[in-house]
Image 1 (cartoon, rainbow, N blue to C red):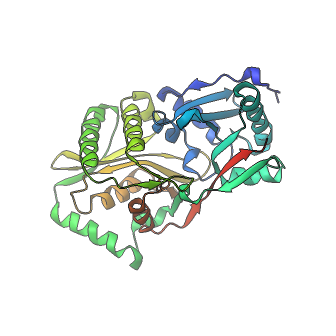
Image 2: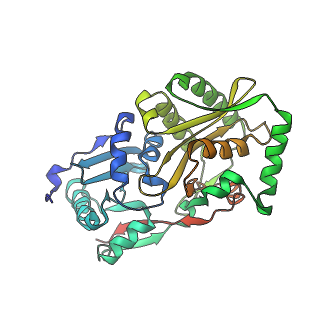
Image 3: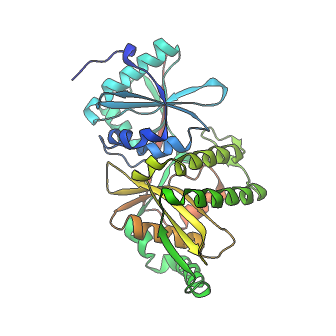
Length: 326
């Protein structure tokens, strides 16, 4: 086991070509957070200035720059027994190189428990952030939509099947389809911007306009679908009606557990039952055996919260902010 110091810490900009290699680190310890996939970090690299620091197969440290020049870290991606060591290294980097206290954002509850048991959080304020909890579902439940509680979902799907019988199909997508996917994404974005976006609530309980985050996600999705190398790592599928793409979804399988992380889901909202269809079909075709499905958080947007609750999550992955006391 090599002992590193802060002179070894060279942060780099996250590129699409890095995702497959860096996914190894995300599987070194168990966690259920959507942040357990580098795809999420890449999707928001334009909204947050995402950087990474790699340690020869032992660990990965991520950071991002928020508004007003703030810099945040993430919990180390490494083996559980190595977490206190790399947490301390990250702390030294923030304190000595950046000259600021270490603040960890979106800390997953499994990692927080490991660090807390090791006494590595004794000098930290630990705050549970309910508004950024991930929604986790039973894989079987979302693939089958069986039972009374899913009757409304099945009704939407039945309406779709009746109206588009013989006219629709699910297709697994690849890089050869990237121009078509981007064209649909552009149309979706234009319609979304014309609609009322409402407002959201951030981790501090302050209201915010989600349009900036939406723009960042849009740029991140375009970056993904236009990079051929990423298709070896992510799953992408779409629903076609009359041979035209009308919905697509992007996801990855967690390296740490039998769980699919659904990072992107876009559909023509004017077609009844289409969102329910892409949700179900994508899982059935691309993740037929996973036990759990993580559909990320609700970004503090009430409409999105109600939509996620309507699928009856089996649990929540709670997240925390860790702030070093100086």
